[in-house]
Length: 312
Image (cartoon, rainbow, N blue to C red; front, top):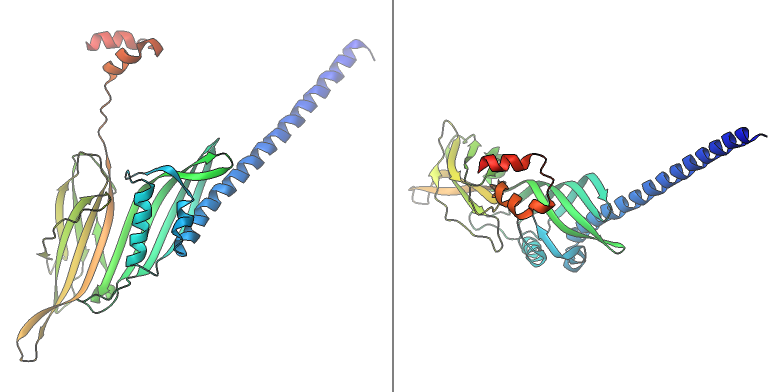
């Protein structure tokens, strides 16, 4: 074999060897990523399992100590909120559908669709029955790897709606509309829509509050819902403190009856409470001129410097 043939064979052998190494490395990376996705998905499933079993310590172990939610709630506040939910809804059951898992080195992002169903622990003194709750949300959970363990470090809820019904309201189709996202300081409205049953009349209240812990309860002012149109609307201005908001509609279904002396009385027979999340997007306070002045030595301006001078 001459030198030219040997060189050709050697080059071919090296090319095959390089391709072999590349393929095996790619497979190894894919396997590693797959294992990370399995571990991350298990965290979500463990969270749902512990939530359904009301195991608060197991839930706490899944969260990082520096956890911060999209509503600026820390780990302790979230755990207290969970325990309060269990007290109100002792039989609550959670379910989740994992839509996507993304791994980026020591960081992970999980998209989920979540649902919870429950019956209130106490009987309403007004309607003499327990309330039915259905809640749906779409959430992104952020995780970080600490050594060999993954922990939840944050989350952001894009959509969230909870519906609680008592008495005759359980049989009615009552909807409530509000935007899922608004800008800070922007005007928006919440609107109740329903068909008021014959022989009854409905009253409604629409309130908003910032999502904070402990929560703030605004005063409710009830108004009669238009009998023919079946709607009630209220306009709000979103806050400029960059807090997400909860907009709540409360509907009361009343009936005109008679007491034992044939005197007309009004009785509240049904209650519906619908809460919608409204995410508030802050206005940027970024000052380009100030940023350039502060970081000029570390910027490749590419003509921005001239623009900056013109702006001045």
